[in-house]
Length: 513
Image 1 (tube, helix red, strand yellow):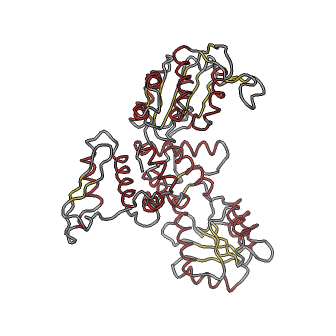
Image 2 (image 1 turned 90 degrees about the vertical axis):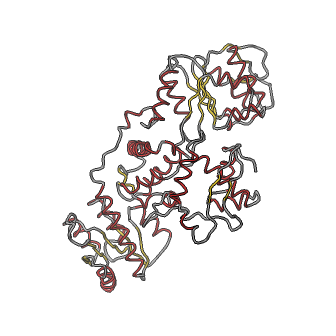
Image 3 (image 1 turned 135 degrees about the horizontal axis):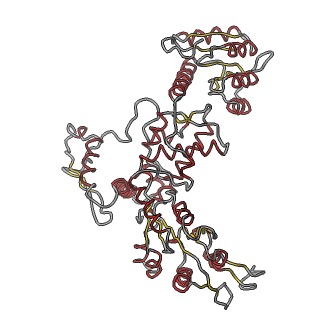
């Protein structure tokens, strides 16, 4: 058995106390020119691994006389933590599956065998083995200790964010932080606080969207005993508790107009009144606010106070969506992996080049928060110390074109609708429309490939201020909703997203159904 001789065929060790199983499995694997070695018991299999060299893959029976497969697996993994093992069983119970994966098996297969299934699992496992060896010299692109703020990125747009953070820390200027959900707006607020002269005083974050309208005033300003049902005693609000420090009002676009009026009073006069109280209380608090909504449109619609908007929007920091800074993805992934290892939440410390490539190509609608969740999930799922392509969620692999084999675009050809003679015109969205000239001839329609369409869109939409991807998403959602006559369920199925996700994007893009 060889572990480093690239010229030799992969070696597969079959451990089973049934000679007939060893023979039949050996014949299937040998058909693909794999070198097959046999062991008639768990004890002999463990001894073979200890003696070395280590096989590329092991097929191990769970139920054997003497040492069981699970016991053998634990011994094998203690000798070689990276050893890939496929467990074999005739009993496909939940307990079997759970134990197999719990102790680090790559996969498990049911008896009697389907030869095609055996070869597929062997091929996948050997590819994973090769991927893990390929990243043996993996070196993180960053040192997580250099990013104690938690904001990771070196792209030009992030450098601009860092510069503005540095400029506003020396004063008490009010800052409005905008950007999509999951981009890290609270991290920006905390960074401003940490580098300001108020760093020794409290920092309190309040999610305005998570607190009911009838409770938010009590939460922010406190209340007096008996001021409302359930107010059994006096309570200090966030502003009093944060005196001298910094308060971060997240999702301020969800705040009721009545509460907005009182926030304006704090900004203008530096004073509050508890709910049910008459005493005016002076507070010295710096306010940082954040929103993923278009406050300018809300001001026009009179759902957000104009005077408060201008008080909050003294300095604005826009956090870019992750799709706008894809070059930062490898750094963020490394940061997440290193933190997981430090916190002992995962043993995975590496990422295969194939997996990293997919992570970089994925669009990340949930931004950095979604990326962190995917890395955490993949690190937990990974059997070895490396996150492989197979460990990524299937929706990420498929959306990024990494589902295995040759990556395929979501749409391969764009052709004209049957009723069109010359052109397709997009619905008016935001006061503009995109027109794409398309030949109606069936013979010529396939020539308009995705690549040609994207080249056109890059040139045409690149002239506009609105980001290209956001514009395309907006147009696609409008078109599909129009085609489905406003049926959100049918539109979400057509777009390949959940109904909740579609409703969220409709709100974020300011569309109306």
